[in-house]
Image (cartoon, rainbow, N blue to C red; front, side, top):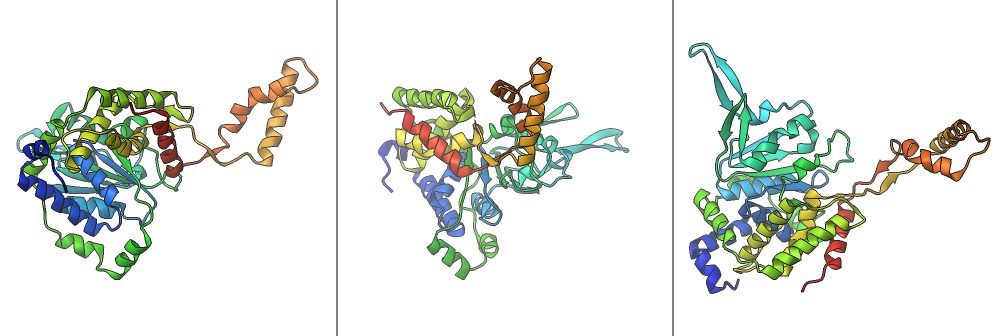
Length: 368
């Protein structure tokens, strides 16, 4: 990999080599997903968190475990379930009869790497327990604030929200994730190697840490020194504005999302051996940044049934009668359609369409 002199000054040879070995090791454990692995490292170095969404069995948890084994940081895993309580995540104060005081018992969130497995299987109350931790790097229990260790990195996995037993993450929670990844099915060659090779769990158990706390903190500092020109910042601002005006997006990207996108682009450039950000870095990250935060206008997976049509006609007749007419007008149907249809339609959840939406916004904003 070609490294510019300015980048070499930002990263020591040893740290650059450690980062390369770390990515190589994770790629050997998660086959055929080099770009997704790089984006996970981008989230780590940019000081963000990553949400991995896909169908069961496609390697979400394997990627999280591979990252944890490679980073050499304190690691905790929480399996989110429907009966998980906030105290199970952040901790709880327990009364000590000897000291006659409440003693705080830290939860698994007090780790440097936290795997929140199947986060959308827990109810919103428990999901929100991570909100303060991910945004402020601290938790507050019984009025007392407890600072989390540094670095703090959340790797959350979730199943598609149209699967049974899932609770969609609220906008405020989604906004705390820097990137949202989707692994997809492996390629033919990678899948064959996976089937013929050693069990991934055994390989992860034998994996050795390639980074430590000082390495991660030094790399994060180097990310802040990567240069972003005024023209590139203007390009990012144009993308944010376009996301807010696009007809397919219900909630566009916020200024906080723009700052996160710039941090991610700096980390991406650093991993590629550059001390400056290019528009191509922003373009490579924009779909994942948009997926993590935006809400598009959903399509329809389940339409209206004949029974719904009969109900709409009955309601329209009653509406016309109340307005003093003996006949139904199209305006009557139009007035009632949202109320009749809203609770019967099943929205379509499709990450592929989300990605297409992100590409449409990218193509609509020229690079000066």
